Amino acid sequence: MLVCSANWLLPDDSLSLPPVACEIQAFRRRVDILAGRAGFRCDGRYVPVERVDLVLAGDMLDTLTSRRWHASLRPWHATPAADRVMAEVAQGCLRQGRRAIASLRQLCRRGVRVPSATSLARPSRERSVAVPVRVVIIAGDRDPRTGLGAFPASAADPWQTASCTRWGDHGEVFITHGHSLDPAAATAGTTEPRDPSL
Image 1 (cartoon, rainbow, N blue to C red):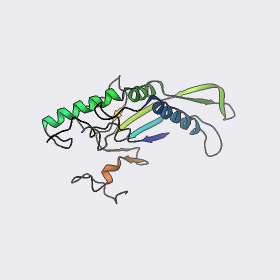
Image 2 (spheres, one colour; image 1 turned 45 degrees about the vertical axis):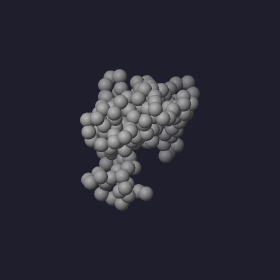
Image 3 (cartoon, helix red, strand yellow; image 1 turned 90 degrees about the horizontal axis):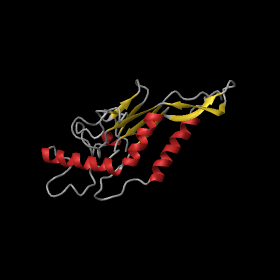
Image 4 (spheres, rainbow, N blue to C red; image 1 turned 135 degrees about the vertical axis):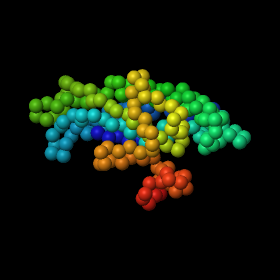
């Protein structure tokens, strides 16, 4: 099962507040509901999904909206000073968004519980099964530049970070953050070879 979400915009601590707990819980409940419903096949049988792929399609962090950007220092500058501030802002975003990050970690570690199937291919009321969850984070235009290590892959953070702005599943599904299709936001060589989706 594929779940795609974008624009979480977790802020640093300088201008806006992080998402409230009820928003994070509502997202988790929605993923649980979708995983259960996805087990119903076209022929009416119920077969639990094998895996949930959660693709966060860009702008997980909001590194552009911060008071740390001032005077001649801007987030789009590729200078050592701008890189230092970008890393500080990203760390502030991760601190402020710790509830959301903890929720992602929990999803990765525990999976999603869905009803198991009965012998009649119906959802069981007594038994459930844990479905593994894989989280993939794609960079958006408000996320830190690739290479600054905002989302390190480790046992503590068991998600994958796409090194570019796209994710694909063997040619069947193609997901990218919208800024790569916007000619107003693109730089040379960054737009996809297709008409923009505006």
